[in-house]
Image 1 (cartoon, rainbow, N blue to C red):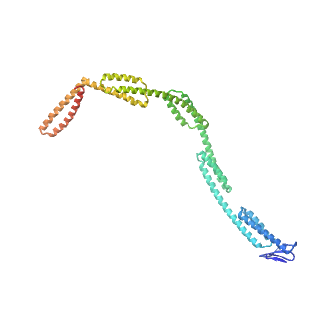
Image 2: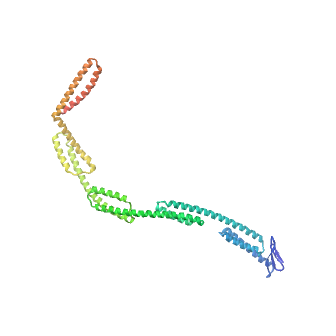
Image 3: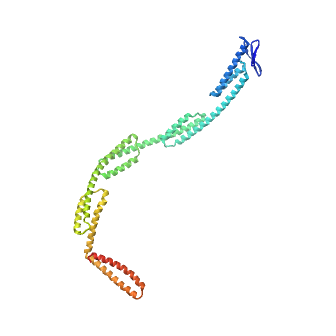
Length: 409
């Protein structure tokens, strides 16, 4: 008979393993020595040790599911319980029990993790739905459309929830996208109609602009072109394929007109600058008549200058006030000389001036006598009052005498 700490072989070749519950028959060995029998069943034990070690490593380091792990544990436990190996079978059972605890712990961890992921996914999808519903009312068509497409990609990357919750959120999400798409479609349909109306309006504006391009009614046509431009801007944009062509025609017609006007105005400006030079020469000739010493000859000379002045055409608008002001100044000086001569030679005016001077002189003489009388009587207040009145009358008399001098004394 042969034995070791965990098993023995009796004289009949029966192999036993020692357990806490006593010896258990492992099997029968008739092919060799008892030592070989023990070695064989010890190797089977080592095989179980290796398998349990491999399973422990798989459970700890891989994503082996709890179900598959438990199946593998049950398979190994069955082999241990069948007592077909010699060794510390109780130690193997304890390792398997601990492995069961590990699998259960991993199961609970995964369950909690899955619940957490599910909650996170729900929150993420609810956030996507809220943003989609907000975007559904947006009029930023391109940006909102691109954002909604990005939200769909994000949705697809998230894990599914339970069917009911996932379907409810997806329904809201899909409804928001549909509402936006419907509004965007209606907007662009309306926009297409507006652009078609703008195209028709601009066609009419282009035709009128082209009909005016040869006009030489510079002021009225330029004003009409400004009105057409305002109408163009108010019409809005036509379809892209028409807008540029219509604008090129519209702008081209204006360019033809304004180029012709510019050339005409350039010729006119040159002519007006020449007119200004000639009028400046006449202004200098007129200014040489001042001061007026011989009224008759000055009047005749100015008339000659003015006739030549009137025969010259327009000058540049910005130079007109200054050059005309110089001629007007000479004309006013001659008119003032004429008025002075008329006053000097007008008998009626001279007589009126002489009469006024006489009346004022009589008033001054009278006041002087009244002042003397008042002072003689000791009435100083009356004398002072009459003195102030006398000063005013003397001032008027001085003015009258100067006016009389203009008539030659």
